[in-house]
Image (cartoon, rainbow, N blue to C red; front, side):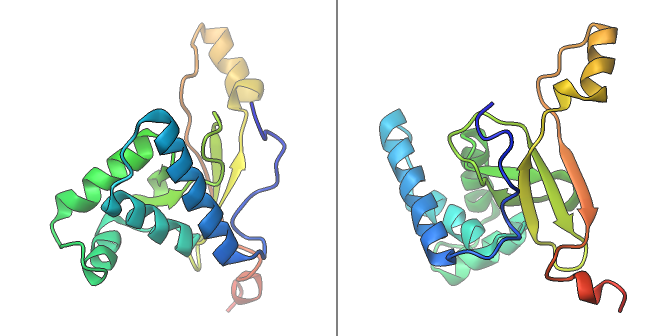
Amino acid sequence: MAGENAAPVGFDRHDHSACVSAALAAAEARCAEEGLRLTPVRRKVLELLLQEHRALKAYAILDLLRDAGFGSQPPVAYRALDFLAQHGFVHRIERLNAFVACAHPGETHMPAFMICRLCEAVAEAQSAPARGSLGEAARAAGFQIERTVVEAEGVCPKCLGKADA
């Protein structure tokens, strides 16, 4: 699994505009290579999620799309999110019923998410559930893991001082 030992992405300080630009360029290149259509709405949804570095609910995305002149019909946002999730550009955060841009697009991986309960920032790390106790239990039961959702809730470094308040 590529990048399995990579540090979590999402809480570290970094050049945010370069991060967004590089991710959008990578998505455009991948879509061109694979014959996928990164329509203006799909691109804008991805851009919005990349800019936030936190999970956004579909209706929040819809509001941002409307503000950017893309209309206000829910299917617009849902179709874009479905496409982006299907092709690994975004992930659905089950705990929040929201979406976050993938920190490792183009890599086959099983992400684990750390969600700040105060600011809802999300960091993505790699997980290997098939190697841990879940994997052992699955093998013992004759079960093959195809997909997992690993989400941990806590407090991010930025909010750590606020946690006691």
